[in-house]
Structures are given as structure tokens and as C-alpha cells.
Length: 472
Image 1 (spheres, one colour):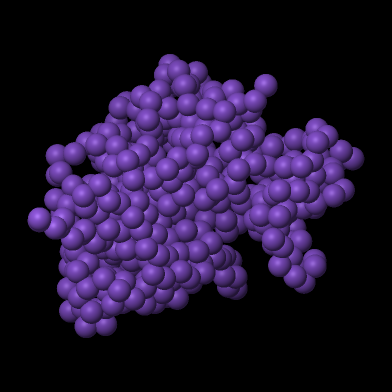
Image 2: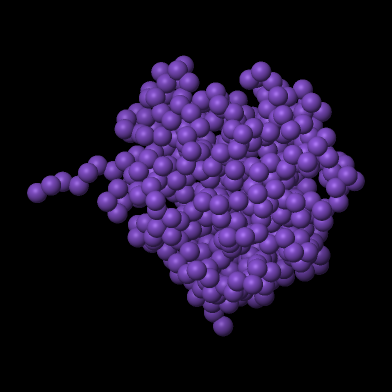
């Protein structure tokens, strides 16, 4: 009797705004599973000139995690890196000029005014298809005093890949979030860069998911323990997450829910009508040239920041599962607030800011306050799904909710109730799974000609989804 071939293994470096991890993905014979080998914290650090990312610490965590992965799985075949969007590091002669700024730093407000004074937002949207977010990369570039000193600007996953391989590139899905990619050609809009006094010389060559960025530098081969290629994946974490959203219906919407909620549809053409711009929808690039037509909604950030404030007040940890159970047991209606209100976008005393929006209706008990947060997020999710359908002309019959938010049963049920649609929750680890699948396809561990539907069929085959039906 012939034994099944051993599964093939790939390392996914998945970097989020609050934490990062290195994951081994194993693929083969109807198998697709993950093993987290390293977790590490991430977050803003306050310096004299504002909020930054501690990129050196992050890079060291990545190296340590990759070394752990090789010790655990000596047959690793490649590495893929994904992270949050918009933030970048500036290089000159290969050296970082300064720590990358954090997207929540206050300097971006000046960038918005400077950009829109030259190119009004309606013109920008027709060129780049992006919703207005005050921290998009082109706004940051416009007020970065060091940009003129740099010879290259690299988004975070590209910066980590450069440190690993020595090659400077821009992976296209993440580059599409900068505001400097033409929404139709998906090439750098050099004319727009010139209009905004952004030197085109800092924009690196574009590459697509599945291409090889390069191999580990010789000094890192010894430290990590293997000579591995770094493969471009959907380096914008949402692009990777959408790869792993099973989308069991061609009319399904997706919600990638973590710190942010990214709600939308997968299309073949961008939607740049005035109505889409006014509704705050964006057209970002996905894997295999798909358009991720979506809206950014503040997600579990509201809940995590609220809990952080309560833990500081109590000087003790809070059991999130117990708190959510108590919130689910609240029988009275709770007041809602605008989850996208600008006052909620920065770190700080989140309970006080939410209470200010709710006024005298603000719940006094923590379970009811938590329920108010969850219901407000779910309303924003449901509204965005309906808007996506209306603006694109693509009716929606179900919602796939992936990422960490898929574990929040209260949020999933509330989203089903408010949207009137079935919600299929899972997989939790969608971003890492999408990262691994793109590597596996590039290596031939799955059919190199497999389209996204085939990759998603493997997800549906190997992962159980939880179904939430709308009530009432």
C-alpha cells in the first residue's frame, strides 16, 4: 500500500497593527493547516517627533520566528510576508533614514490639506479609486521631510523583504493602497506623483503575488538555518485574507474583521462613480488582478481599546469571553453610535469618547456598554454590505466573515440580524492561510493553474464554517 506523500510546508510572516506571528502552513492531499510557531507584540511607540513603529524590534522578532519555524519544519520551501497597509520606511543607500511613522500619527492631517490643495479629492478618486482615509501613503509622503533624501520608499512588508533579501520591490496589492497606483492600469501614476512633488525615483518596481522576490541573504541563511526564497504574496493582509474567504456563492460579500473591518465584494472592474466616492468606498487590488471593492469600518479596535482602558482602571485583566457572554445576555435595547466617528480613531480613553457620542443614553454597566459597541460595529458592517451591493450593481446573498472577528459570536449574530443575510464565520486564520496558498501555488504544491475558486474550494474542504442565520 502506497503511503500518501508528506505535506509541503511554507512559512507565513503575518504582521498586524497590534501583534505579529510566524506560521507554518502545511499543504497536501486535502490537507491545509497552520501551526503558529512564534507570536510577538507590535504597536506604536511614542518618540519626540510623533508615533512610530519599532521596525528593528519587529524585524528581530521575524528573524527569531523564522529560525523557530526552520527548527520545527526543516523542509520549509519559502517565506511570504503580509502586513497592514499604507506605512513605509525610507531608504538611502540601503540604510533606513528613520523609524517608519505610524498611520495614526497626527502629522497626516497636514498632508491631506497639502494634497487636496493641489489635486482635489474627486480628481484623486477618479485616478486611484481609493476612499478618503487621512493616513493613505500619499498624504504621508506629502509631509515627510525626509522623502527628498531617500532613494527608495518601501511599504512595511516590502521593507522586511528587502532586509531579508536585499531586493527592493513593491508588491502590487499593497501598493494599491498608497494612492499612487492608477486604478485601471495598476501601474504607478507618475504624473500624479509629479503633481504632488513626490519623486518618482523612490517608487520601486512593481511585482505580483506569486513572483519570487529573492533568496535570503547569506548572513541570514546561517542565522535562520535554511536558504529559502521569499515569495511575494498578497502582502496587504486583507488581500491575503480575501484569498482564504471561501465565498461559497458568487454573490457573497466578505468581511475581514480584526482591528479594522474591511467589508466588500470581489469584482473584475473598479467602481469609481461619484456615489462610490461619496459613500467612502475604495478599489484596492487583490490577488490575480481582482478588485477588492470595499469600505473600511472601524472594527474590534473599539472593543480592544475599551477593554484596555477598563483593565488599566481595574489594574487587572478582563475575561473577554465572559464579558461577551454577559453582553449577549443584555435583554434591553442598547443605544448605538457611529462606529466610524473620527473621534474614535486614535488611542486613548475609548470608553469616555464612546460615552460622549452616546450622551445621556450611555449604558452604565460594562456588559450593556460592550453590547452597544458590538451592535454599533455590526450596524456599520450591515450598512457597508448593502452599500457595496447598491453601488456595484451586484446583489448580495450571504456574508463571509473571516479573521479574528469570526470568533466573536455576538458580533457574527448581530451582523446576520442587522443585514438580514446568512453569515458564515471562518476561517479565523484567513490572512495566514491566504499567504500560504499563494506560496503553495507558486511552488506547485497546489496546481499552478488553480484559480481563486479552486484555492477557496480547498479552504472550504479543510475548514469548518459556522453559520449564523438572521433572527426575526
